[in-house]
Image (cartoon, rainbow, N blue to C red):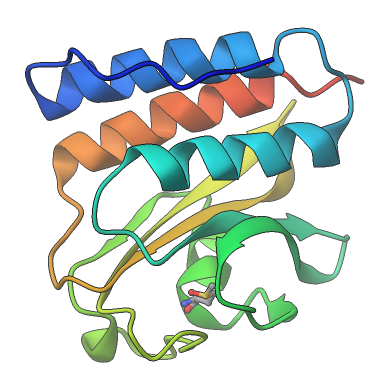
Length: 162
Ligand code: SME
């Protein structure tokens, strides 16, 4: 059973490295994607400050469908040509959005969200989905967060079987 240990990280990069190690341990012995996605989103949501939503959208071959998450109920389906999630999936590039109101086509699931980061999840060259994190603070995510979230997502991708 996982138990959260108090962080000893001196800075944000160390904090992400610590979280990646915790995520690796949490996901190591479990092949079920939904179980791992649920625990992954809970770990991140509980561990990082100033978040109001953290979770997965999985690609069903046509559009993105909401998966395990923490936060308020969210929009269920997102076409690839819509929103920050669609942009990350289409371009297969992490989107760091300091002001969601300035992002054309942003989809507001929780009106409290002011900034957002979305990391595409690609396994064996196939789009699996996206990892989406929202904050009520403007400009919450920077370059360190991008690297950190990508490192965390690599742990999730490693846990995928098949
Ligand atoms: N804001 C996202 C939609 C998902 S919610 O933030 C949970 C977007 O524009 O794609």
